[in-house]
Image (cartoon, rainbow, N blue to C red):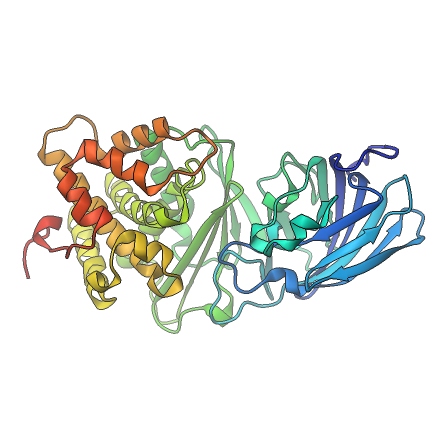
Length: 461
């Protein structure tokens, strides 16, 4: 058990010391959070929701009560749909209790919200952990935009006694005892996955580990080896991933979102955690060359997200930079690692070009437009973004510049980045215009010029 620091009455607005105790069940968790210090005599409690998450997770919080450590009830009043006011009539620590319904993902599952299935549960902290404020202003914001309260110390422990014997809790957070974790940052930044996972080292020097679910079956034999090769290729190109150690969590897609045909992969980065999902229909031979190539490109893409946007934050209009560059680096790093042949790289890039045409291509407008237009145009962030990076790289090489385009571009972006304020499109366009022709930047990065096979170095059709 994480110890609670004994404190008396602290001034309003002082940081809290938090201990979460979690009992997972079937599609839900029950939470008791002990609060020492923090806002008094009134605590404003709110929840958040993952950016781009499926619906408002905070609407799935219910059965909210509060009490003293000794068990005396405290007054709780709901504020709007998803926030609460607690009258803290004690100078000692107090306890907030609630239920979070996680449930199975729907058919439009998007992997940035907490999910559960019969064989696992993934908890994104921003969805499920309560936040505590000393004024109501913070809870008036939309859940995804709510700030984090001040926390000096936090711990989370799980009681898995009602779950299968082979289930464990995996997280990038330090595990101080079995299923018990201490957090160096606000709990809302955390990720926890529960299920039959097993840890494996990918590269200790790079601080990269894997937690693989026993049900993962897409290229399972190659999974750790490919991740190791790709991470090392990218470290040679960009240096070690910024920040501390990271964890790749491999989870099979739940049946409700598994593909009816072919193979489907999904992933995201949150709190130095790469959440990776995959599934395939039964007819797919899971260890053939095409599946292995797809797996390598997918892994390379997701590992690059430790650089952008985790190591270098960007604004929403630069979503194309994050996704398109990751797709480009995923393919090129798989080629450099020898997992993808030159012919395979060209073939898969040509297939990406075909998808670009099928999605409407130029009719979507500029990359920035696709970045801000919502889910309908989201696939274009990947394909047009990658095609643009391919052209920029070819132009850089044709001009005989020293070093690879990607490594030079990364270094110049990091020179511009202050480590806190997300980069804006103007800064990126300015940097690119010093590396390649400004007209190329105007046509392809800022504009929506048609992309052709010859300028991709793929011939004509």
